[in-house]
Image (cartoon, rainbow, N blue to C red; front, side):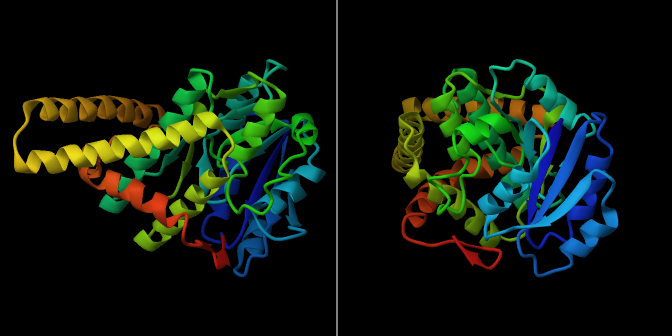
Length: 324
């Protein structure tokens, strides 16, 4: 049996759509546990209106996403726990694809692709391309045996393994990281037990942020967990990314003063490799590549990465009225 645990807070615009998707799953042996994290809107009423027989709605016993997940996992009847976010949409083969990925009992934790839903704005296109690079990096690092990142909007784990690693204990105070910290604890206890879900049908789509301010707050929240990261591979990857962006910025600035064909060839090679990689991720998640956004990000991305990295160490993000 699969238990789908969905924490939600002020998601009145999204819950009905997600519940409609969950109702249409081809896999039949599952339950849905919606955990209300102290919503101040009509989320609970909408959930009640759209619930179906195997849906439960419970109240978070404490505050925050990890506490909400703990609340749902504790009462879950399934051997497999699946998590997603309330603002997501899933296809009818989603749970079946997850089940197939966990047939081997040695696999304790799986994570799938997440894509940004295509919307007719350039800001949404920028987010779609940028997010594809993150999802692709997580899948690629897992493929070479060093999983570095996953996304709580699309992951699953064995409830028994969650209990053995004591769940989120030790990082409850960190607002983000319910996905990556748990993944890391499971890897430490069960080596070679984490894998990326290789089925496109397991892709989850999420909404882009509506404004630049919301986007920055979300990314600051995500970036804030990196300073608590104990994985040497993840830390090395972070330094590598920063180093590449610094080098790229320096190369662009240098090219403004004198045309250097060697630097130009390096820049074009970098762009070609990134375009090939991100286009493949976009095809896998079926969100479509936004080429104009990709070109703009070639200039903007280095400043964005460095800016968010620095800001995450000196600012406290606010998310849905809560700090952290």
